Image 1 (spheres, one colour):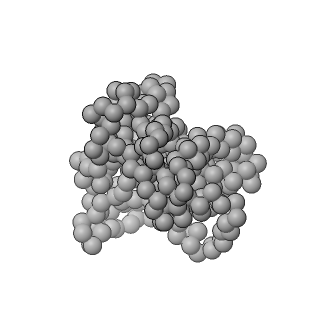
Image 2 (cartoon, helix red, strand yellow):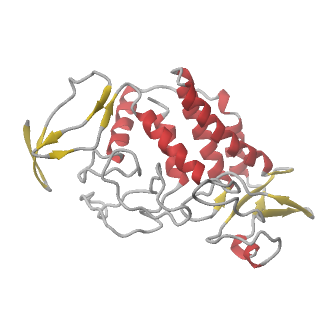
Image 3 (cartoon, helix red, strand yellow):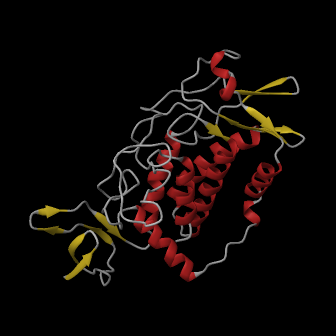
Length: 289
């Protein structure tokens, strides 16, 4: 045991780096027992199972058992006098909005993580990730309306009435259609993912893994930000399905530029709201290990 003094107190730390045997472990001292944790070569794949569960719950237009029915079946886009039904993909946060670029990024990250699982022969995880990715790619392809136009985004915070052209389809809840160059470039890149080459950098991978560790509890508060992964989870803002295993918030908050440890208990849309985009970036990063 080694005594460590920090800005927030004095602690004793123990180094278990020499413990290499794969298995499930827990620590116990003075009658206090930790939640179990794993030691194995592919430890980040545990989080992938949880995050893909969260993304499944975020599906739009799909009946998710125990969470919600087939939602937003009246979501549509109007282009050149035609009406296109467009629910699908994933809601992009803990509310009910839907952004096509967000769903595209989610599909890309799932395919990236799936390729990592395939390379290790982990077929159950590979198949589950690809199943979820194909749900999103179906939506991405249906968003193409011809001549570079796509259904891009809509914003809502309510369950809709399943009827076309009623009040819940108007205003900011109307699906926006345009031919943005940036968005089309993004979609083209995702559709051409198989041609991409990823270079490994050991130093950057070490930094990345430290970031993964920080998120799941190796932080001054000993608190995991992924609900169901690690332990000592905080309450998050998820208005759509409620607390869900694998949900992860948009970010962490510190006091301005000082980076003083700061963990506000309140929920806000820019702090503790769960986002599909954060799950995307976790999967992209975890796919490197």
